[in-house]
Length: 239
Image (cartoon, rainbow, N blue to C red; front, side):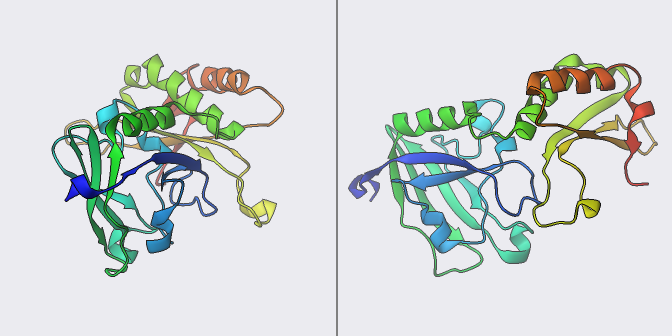
Protein backbone atom coordinates (compact mmCIF):
# COMPACT_ATOMS: atom_id res chain seq x y z
CA UNK A 1 0.00 0.00 0.00
CA UNK A 2 3.01 2.28 -0.28
CA UNK A 3 1.57 4.01 -3.35
CA UNK A 4 -1.11 5.48 -1.07
CA UNK A 5 1.40 7.11 1.30
CA UNK A 6 1.96 10.85 1.05
CA UNK A 7 5.51 11.92 0.19
CA UNK A 8 7.36 13.12 3.28
CA UNK A 9 10.57 15.13 3.59
CA UNK A 10 13.59 13.87 5.54
CA UNK A 11 15.79 16.28 7.49
CA UNK A 12 18.85 15.07 9.40
CA UNK A 13 19.84 17.09 12.44
CA UNK A 14 23.14 16.81 14.32
CA UNK A 15 22.67 17.01 18.06
CA UNK A 16 25.19 16.64 20.85
CA UNK A 17 23.22 14.76 23.52
CA UNK A 18 23.05 15.85 27.14
CA UNK A 19 24.18 12.36 28.18
CA UNK A 20 27.05 11.62 25.82
CA UNK A 21 28.81 9.01 27.95
CA UNK A 22 27.75 6.19 25.61
CA UNK A 23 29.23 7.96 22.56
CA UNK A 24 30.92 11.38 22.60
CA UNK A 25 30.02 12.19 18.99
CA UNK A 26 26.81 13.93 18.01
CA UNK A 27 23.82 11.83 17.05
CA UNK A 28 22.36 12.34 13.57
CA UNK A 29 18.66 12.58 14.27
CA UNK A 30 16.04 12.10 11.55
CA UNK A 31 13.11 14.52 11.38
CA UNK A 32 10.09 13.65 9.23
CA UNK A 33 8.38 16.71 7.77
CA UNK A 34 10.26 18.73 10.37
CA UNK A 35 8.95 16.69 13.32
CA UNK A 36 10.95 14.39 15.59
CA UNK A 37 8.32 11.66 15.48
CA UNK A 38 10.78 9.12 16.90
CA UNK A 39 11.05 10.99 20.19
CA UNK A 40 7.33 10.57 20.77
CA UNK A 41 7.51 6.76 20.61
CA UNK A 42 11.05 6.17 21.95
CA UNK A 43 11.95 9.21 24.09
CA UNK A 44 14.99 7.59 25.68
CA UNK A 45 16.49 6.65 22.31
CA UNK A 46 19.50 8.16 20.54
CA UNK A 47 19.94 8.07 16.78
CA UNK A 48 23.04 6.71 15.04
CA UNK A 49 26.30 8.39 16.02
CA UNK A 50 28.08 10.77 13.67
CA UNK A 51 31.01 8.36 13.73
CA UNK A 52 29.03 6.04 11.42
CA UNK A 53 28.42 8.72 8.78
CA UNK A 54 31.84 8.40 7.19
CA UNK A 55 33.02 6.17 4.38
CA UNK A 56 31.04 5.11 1.29
CA UNK A 57 27.38 6.16 1.03
CA UNK A 58 26.17 2.58 1.07
CA UNK A 59 27.56 2.15 4.59
CA UNK A 60 25.69 5.11 6.13
CA UNK A 61 23.13 4.12 8.78
CA UNK A 62 20.08 5.21 6.75
CA UNK A 63 21.27 4.11 3.30
CA UNK A 64 18.36 2.54 1.38
CA UNK A 65 18.71 -0.04 -1.40
CA UNK A 66 16.34 -2.30 -3.32
CA UNK A 67 17.06 -5.01 -0.76
CA UNK A 68 15.07 -4.30 2.44
CA UNK A 69 17.31 -3.59 5.41
CA UNK A 70 16.26 -3.63 9.08
CA UNK A 71 18.16 -1.06 11.15
CA UNK A 72 18.16 0.33 14.67
CA UNK A 73 16.97 3.88 14.24
CA UNK A 74 17.15 4.84 17.93
CA UNK A 75 18.60 2.99 20.91
CA UNK A 76 19.22 3.80 24.59
CA UNK A 77 22.56 4.85 26.05
CA UNK A 78 22.87 1.42 27.68
CA UNK A 79 22.08 -1.38 25.19
CA UNK A 80 19.13 -2.39 23.05
CA UNK A 81 18.98 -5.68 24.95
CA UNK A 82 18.71 -3.83 28.25
CA UNK A 83 16.13 -1.09 27.64
CA UNK A 84 14.85 -1.76 24.14
CA UNK A 85 15.32 -0.02 20.81
CA UNK A 86 13.31 1.25 17.85
CA UNK A 87 13.78 -0.57 14.55
CA UNK A 88 12.62 0.20 11.02
CA UNK A 89 13.00 -1.52 7.66
CA UNK A 90 14.36 0.67 4.84
CA UNK A 91 14.07 -0.04 1.15
CA UNK A 92 14.05 1.79 -2.17
CA UNK A 93 11.21 1.19 -4.61
CA UNK A 94 11.89 3.05 -7.86
CA UNK A 95 11.88 6.77 -7.08
CA UNK A 96 10.64 6.26 -3.51
CA UNK A 97 12.25 5.27 -0.20
CA UNK A 98 9.98 3.42 2.22
CA UNK A 99 10.27 3.14 6.00
CA UNK A 100 7.96 0.47 7.39
CA UNK A 101 7.78 -2.70 9.52
CA UNK A 102 8.55 -0.68 12.64
CA UNK A 103 9.39 -2.53 15.86
CA UNK A 104 9.72 -0.96 19.31
CA UNK A 105 11.20 -3.43 21.78
CA UNK A 106 10.73 -1.02 24.70
CA UNK A 107 7.03 -0.36 24.03
CA UNK A 108 5.39 -2.60 21.46
CA UNK A 109 2.33 -0.35 21.24
CA UNK A 110 4.28 2.78 20.28
CA UNK A 111 5.56 2.92 16.70
CA UNK A 112 5.46 5.63 14.02
CA UNK A 113 3.33 5.33 10.90
CA UNK A 114 4.90 4.02 7.70
CA UNK A 115 6.70 6.74 5.75
CA UNK A 116 7.45 7.36 2.08
CA UNK A 117 10.18 9.73 0.84
CA UNK A 118 11.17 10.99 -2.58
CA UNK A 119 14.40 9.08 -3.25
CA UNK A 120 16.26 12.04 -4.78
CA UNK A 121 15.49 14.30 -1.81
CA UNK A 122 16.28 11.48 0.62
CA UNK A 123 19.68 10.68 -0.85
CA UNK A 124 20.59 14.36 -1.18
CA UNK A 125 19.81 14.87 2.51
CA UNK A 126 21.96 11.89 3.52
CA UNK A 127 24.86 13.30 1.49
CA UNK A 128 24.38 16.79 2.95
CA UNK A 129 24.38 15.49 6.53
CA UNK A 130 27.46 13.32 5.95
CA UNK A 131 29.39 16.36 4.68
CA UNK A 132 28.05 18.80 7.29
CA UNK A 133 30.52 20.02 9.93
CA UNK A 134 28.67 23.20 10.91
CA UNK A 135 27.44 21.57 14.13
CA UNK A 136 30.93 20.88 15.43
CA UNK A 137 32.34 22.36 18.60
CA UNK A 138 36.12 23.04 18.53
CA UNK A 139 36.88 19.69 20.16
CA UNK A 140 34.91 17.87 17.45
CA UNK A 141 36.85 19.61 14.69
CA UNK A 142 40.18 18.72 16.29
CA UNK A 143 39.11 15.08 16.76
CA UNK A 144 37.92 14.77 13.16
CA UNK A 145 41.02 16.37 11.62
CA UNK A 146 43.40 14.48 13.91
CA UNK A 147 41.75 11.17 13.01
CA UNK A 148 42.16 11.98 9.32
CA UNK A 149 45.81 12.97 9.79
CA UNK A 150 46.70 9.85 11.76
CA UNK A 151 44.78 7.49 9.50
CA UNK A 152 46.45 8.92 6.38
CA UNK A 153 49.94 8.80 7.91
CA UNK A 154 50.28 5.00 8.06
CA UNK A 155 52.34 5.59 11.20
CA UNK A 156 50.74 2.99 13.42
CA UNK A 157 51.11 0.28 10.79
CA UNK A 158 54.83 1.03 10.70
CA UNK A 159 55.02 -0.05 14.34
CA UNK A 160 52.85 -3.14 13.96
CA UNK A 161 49.73 -1.39 15.27
CA UNK A 162 46.34 -0.24 14.04
CA UNK A 163 44.46 2.96 14.90
CA UNK A 164 41.13 2.00 16.50
CA UNK A 165 39.50 5.27 17.57
CA UNK A 166 39.86 9.03 17.80
CA UNK A 167 37.06 10.72 19.76
CA UNK A 168 36.31 14.06 21.38
CA UNK A 169 36.31 14.19 25.17
CA UNK A 170 33.86 16.78 26.46
CA UNK A 171 33.81 18.53 29.79
CA UNK A 172 31.07 17.03 31.91
CA UNK A 173 28.53 19.62 33.05
CA UNK A 174 27.81 20.02 36.77
CA UNK A 175 30.82 17.91 37.74
CA UNK A 176 33.58 19.12 40.10
CA UNK A 177 36.73 19.91 38.13
CA UNK A 178 38.80 17.40 40.13
CA UNK A 179 36.48 14.55 39.10
CA UNK A 180 36.56 15.06 35.34
CA UNK A 181 39.26 15.21 32.67
CA UNK A 182 39.73 18.50 30.82
CA UNK A 183 38.27 18.76 27.34
CA UNK A 184 40.34 17.07 24.68
CA UNK A 185 40.72 14.12 22.33
CA UNK A 186 41.21 10.44 23.13
CA UNK A 187 43.26 8.33 20.70
CA UNK A 188 43.23 4.54 20.92
CA UNK A 189 45.30 2.00 19.01
CA UNK A 190 46.35 -1.60 19.45
CA UNK A 191 49.05 -3.96 18.36
CA UNK A 192 48.27 -6.27 15.48
CA UNK A 193 47.79 -9.60 17.20
CA UNK A 194 50.63 -12.00 16.60
CA UNK A 195 50.03 -15.73 16.49
CA UNK A 196 49.68 -17.02 20.02
CA UNK A 197 50.16 -13.60 21.59
CA UNK A 198 47.68 -11.25 23.22
CA UNK A 199 47.47 -7.91 21.42
CA UNK A 200 47.97 -4.93 23.72
CA UNK A 201 45.93 -1.74 23.49
CA UNK A 202 47.20 1.78 24.07
CA UNK A 203 45.76 5.25 24.34
CA UNK A 204 46.61 8.94 24.39
CA UNK A 205 44.66 11.44 26.48
CA UNK A 206 45.25 14.71 24.64
CA UNK A 207 44.10 18.17 25.65
CA UNK A 208 42.60 20.89 23.49
CA UNK A 209 42.04 24.61 23.95
CA UNK A 210 39.64 27.25 22.69
CA UNK A 211 42.51 29.71 22.21
CA UNK A 212 44.22 28.07 19.21
CA UNK A 213 42.78 27.36 15.74
CA UNK A 214 41.83 23.70 15.33
CA UNK A 215 44.24 23.08 12.45
CA UNK A 216 47.14 24.39 14.50
CA UNK A 217 46.24 22.16 17.45
CA UNK A 218 46.04 19.15 15.14
CA UNK A 219 49.53 19.85 13.80
CA UNK A 220 50.97 19.96 17.33
CA UNK A 221 49.11 16.87 18.55
CA UNK A 222 49.94 14.84 15.44
CA UNK A 223 53.62 15.85 15.64
CA UNK A 224 53.76 14.55 19.20
CA UNK A 225 52.35 11.16 18.19
CA UNK A 226 54.33 10.84 14.95
CA UNK A 227 57.68 11.67 16.53
CA UNK A 228 58.53 8.16 17.74
CA UNK A 229 57.23 4.67 18.46
CA UNK A 230 53.69 5.49 19.69
CA UNK A 231 53.78 2.64 22.19
CA UNK A 232 56.56 4.40 24.10
CA UNK A 233 54.57 7.59 24.77
CA UNK A 234 51.04 6.24 25.04
CA UNK A 235 49.47 4.63 28.08
CA UNK A 236 48.91 0.88 28.07
CA UNK A 237 45.15 0.40 28.44
CA UNK A 238 43.61 -2.18 30.74
CA UNK A 239 46.44 -2.05 33.26
